[in-house]
Structure formats: structure tokens, C-alpha cells
Image 1 (tube, rainbow, N blue to C red):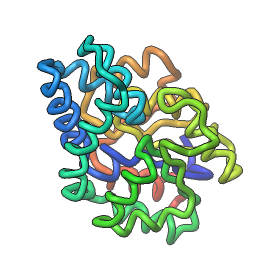
Image 2: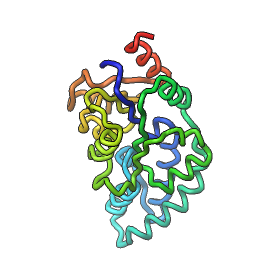
Image 3: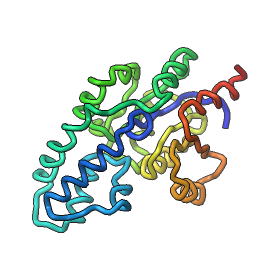
Image 4: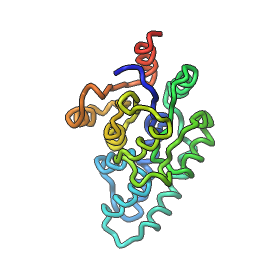
Length: 225
């Protein structure tokens, strides 16, 4: 990799430690239908748009229920916990580092506008992002793992995907960024998913990081700071 033209950030599981909260909300929603979601199924939901998750859950519970009803139940559960979302260590420092070095950034998230509003109300630093591609962006036909969200952000920033970095924690999000031809900073301790990504894509395009501070290290290294 080399110093990027831009960095595109996922939100949940990268900047905010919300994935356990979201997983619990889906799990509790399924219980309303007397169904238990396995860890593997919860991982399959990770990184996807709420509507896409709901369709999967509806299929799994195999009940004659409406999508609208399931979404209402899930919203009641998730709205109670979103205000508890806290930033990962180093998240704010990384965003400020990018801004202070004039490195273009964008937020590319499966979260809807409503969900982002709740999360940013208790994490106002998220409004440092001037470019945001949200899950209900009207210009996006398909959410992650489709490359559409990242392609949208790349177009807005007018940068070369092959010279841009995506920071992701989920398989769906990573696939989205890599299919958009970006380089991946994989912020996760899940080596099984990492190995799967390496087998499917060019290993030179993937760098694993355990802490967000490592990304600042790489930026300084490639910039020659």
C-alpha cells in the first residue's frame, strides 16, 4: 500500500462499538417470534442495511409475519440502546489526524439517516464527516456487500479507488470495499474472516489492524512523517 488519496470509514464496529448492541436487538426481535439466532446468523447480519437484515431474519424465523411488523419490533428494541454507543479507542484521534493532514475522508455506513441522527446526537464528533453515504441514500440501489455504497463515496470525493483505503470490520463491508477496488484496512480480530478475504482477493490489498492507532502509524510511515 501507499499513502491514500482518501480513507472511507465504516461506522458500526469501526468508529462506534455498536455491533454487540445491534446483534442483541436482532436477537431479542427474533425471540418475539420464538426463534433463536445463532452466532453465525448474527455474523451474517453484520455490516448490512437494516432492511436487508430484516429480510434475512424474516426468512429464518419462517413465520407468516410482515416485514413491516418485524421492523417495528426491531426499531423499538434498537432505539433503546443506540444512545449507549461509544467510540472505539483512537477513533476521534484518527478522524482529526486525517482532517489536520488534509486527507479526504468519507463515512460509508449501512445505518439509515434516522439511525445516524441518534448515534451522532451522543457522538457529535461524527459530524466532522462532510461526506456521508448512509444506508438509505437514494442514489444507492444495493447495500453492502454490493460495492455501490463505496462507489458512491468514491464518486463524490473524485478519488482513485485503487489508491484509497476502506476501514471495515465485517465480511459484508469488506467485500463491498474490495469489490469497489479499494484497499482494505481490516479492523477485526476475526482471523477466519480475514483468511477468507485473503483467499478471495489480492492479499496485497488487505492489511489487518487491531487498533485504530495503527492506521495513524501507517499513514505517518507512508507519508514519511
